[in-house]
Amino acid sequence: MRQIVLDTETTGIDPAAGHRIIEIGCVELVERRLTGRHYHVYINPEREVEAEAVAVHGITDEYLRDKPLFKDVADEFFAFIKGAELVIHNAAFDVGFMDAEFARLPSGLKTADHCGIVDTLAIARAKYPGQRNSLDALCKRYGVDNSARELHGALLDAEILADVYLLLTGGQTALSLDAGSANGEGGSQVRRLPADRKPLPVLRADSSEIEAHDKLLAVIEKVAGETLWSRLPE
Image (cartoon, rainbow, N blue to C red; front, side, top):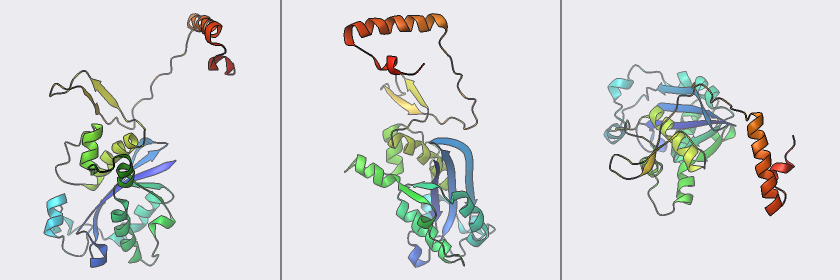
C-alpha cells in the first residue's frame, strides 16, 4: 500500500474566505515503511498572510513573494499524491484547502475522487476520548521527538506525523529503550531511522540449533500435545 503523509500551511483558517495554501509537505510510506521520497514546496498565495497565521508557522509575505503560484505546481503535486492514501491530521482542514485550490484550475478535481483519506485526529479521538489529541500531544504520548518543532512547518510536521501514525495504528518506527530518561523516569523514545539504511542481516539456524529446537518441541508435545510448529511445512 502506498500512503502519503501530508501537511499544509495556509494564510488563514477558512478557504471559503479566500485563504490559500502557502506550503505543502509530504512524505511517502510504502507498506508502512518510509521510502525517503518526499514532496515539498512553498507557494505564493497572491494575498496577505494573516498575522495570526504567521505567529503559528512563521512564513511571511516577503518570503513568499518570489515563490511559484499553486497553478504552477499543481500538476507535479497531484502526480505525487494521485492514487495514494493520504494520512492527514485533521484531514477536513487540509483537504478543504486542497479542494479549494484545485477548484480554481480548469480540472476542478476533488481530492477524494483520486485519493483515499485517513484522518489521524479522528483515529486519536476514538482511541483517547476526552484527551488532548493535537500532534504535539500525541508526540508526547508516544515519545516522538518533536524538539525541532518550534514553529509549524509542513514537511517537518509530515515527517513527525508519519512516526505518530505508525505508532497510533499499532506499527513501529525505531524504539530506543532506555533504563531511564533524563529526568530519572523509565520510558522509551522514538528515533527516526534513515530510509536508505542497510537492511538487517538474516541469520539462519545451523544444524545443531535445529536439532536442539526439535528436541525441545518433542518434550513440549509429550506434555501439551501437538504444537503449531509441527504443522508448518518443511
